[in-house]
Image 1 (cartoon, rainbow, N blue to C red):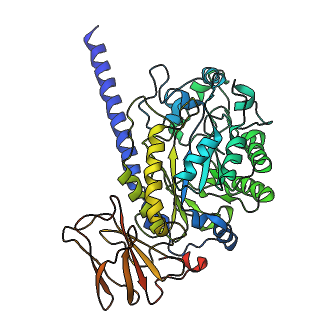
Image 2: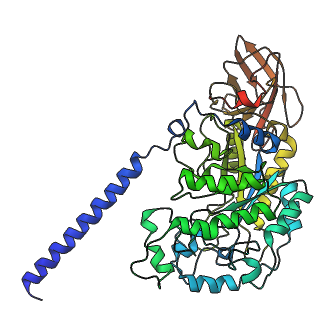
Length: 493
């Protein structure tokens, strides 16, 4: 190789590196400048519609604890395909992270056989853990449906040796146990459909990997995809199953007109069915008041915990592990019992429900560690459930350093959640809105030593924690801390 050629190659390499560095800096700057704070995303003047509040009041506001289930073809791969894809934290994204062509993924789907699935066993596990509602992936982004669909044969009944409708069986089992039932449906993303959009422009190139036979001049048509598959399948779900909630996700390309089609379809067939905000808002998007009539409550970001009281009723979609689908390959970890209970408490005290996900195994059985973690939370709720179920958000101006606060519906009782007891053994609470009549530890019923000076309350904690995870002090007031009226509870803090 001659010197001039070497010199030209060197210049090319340096230029390429400089371009890559500039692009990386640009992406980092864009990410850094995006404001995702709760203060920015939730204007204090936001108010949900009266019909949405009425739907919430039927059961959702009192339920507080739900089970989220990510289950599908991807569950059998456990986060890796032929040595690829394990670097992605979410195993349910394996088709994209491992760039699996549609025909290969279809082969995996054709072998999907969760023979050990038992809907009654699942429902019993959830009910015993104090869970009040269940939401399962009826169709995730891979386009495969867990229900019998006349719209597409790419479903568990028509495409697999299992031949059973999981949505039907689980819906019936949950309702037999007194649990509300909902389905997750990916209305925008569908990797099996070339016309469907991707969540981010950087993933657009994935379309060619998944569908290598597409013509070079192919132009995706989202409205064609909606009309052909997405909207008709949602109509099948709301017509054929007893649904209490429809959980939409990743609204790439969704406009008011497109979202209205889905909202109207749900309302037409199941007027009391709840709809979440991801129909049109991403989990960390700024809430646009224009869209509030399309949905009933706000789903915040994945695994996100509110840091303040929020003006709209929200739901935190968390998970027992770092993945939503079942994952054993690559980096993955489970949360501790303490972490999950703390996240649960903060979500309720901010004004919302806690939707805790588990990813069942490919054989159809629930993940044993998820069962254990659900059980720990259930045991905690058996003692402290009064401070969670039917409770309302913290009525005081701020969250205390030692934990958080929830209140009874009628506003006459405060529940002080001591998550981080101070070394002094004493907690204080300012701006108490009334005279304290009594203070007891919820877990034992024993009286708590307290003193009140004007609007400041001081409580002495026992040397040993009353509860391993959250010592709850039940404080009765002579006055009312917050209105029990749902409409006023929806006002901005």
